[in-house]
Image (cartoon, rainbow, N blue to C red):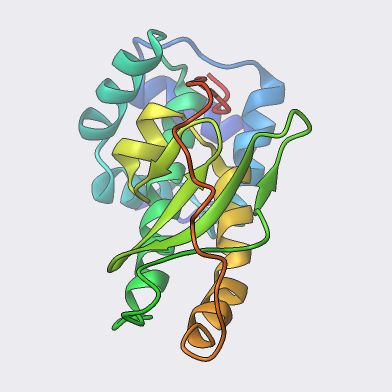
Length: 201
């Protein structure tokens, strides 16, 4: 058991041992992943082991690599597991809201949690008995690793902004019986289908 705090040297050694057949990322990427791990309260090598036990790389990484057509570096593997962890945390928060209001059937958050300069925005939405994402370039997306971790490779910054918007959207839901929500009248077919790979490979 290793409770030694993660630093650049020991995580380099760790990743070389755990992922000997993968490209080893440059020092800048290693420094960045240490910061990302710290934000998720993963501070020692044991914590990384526990992350990989809960989110086995051989279950999460192959589908993602098949989707993007690129083999992840060692840092990319760790980041993909952090994405899976963050998605589960978001799902747990949403699950605590149940039961959702029955009406309206479909309700869109009036404010996007991501708004890219080209007009590609992402919103939280209620669709029936589920909370989803509406992305203007993709349409409705489930909050799941298969949708967010694989198909559009959302990445941690995207998910953290989603997470920060949850409480505001919950308040909108709680008032939805008293006011007319922003019903999804304007949700047409997706404009285009882009693939965003925000994971650092």
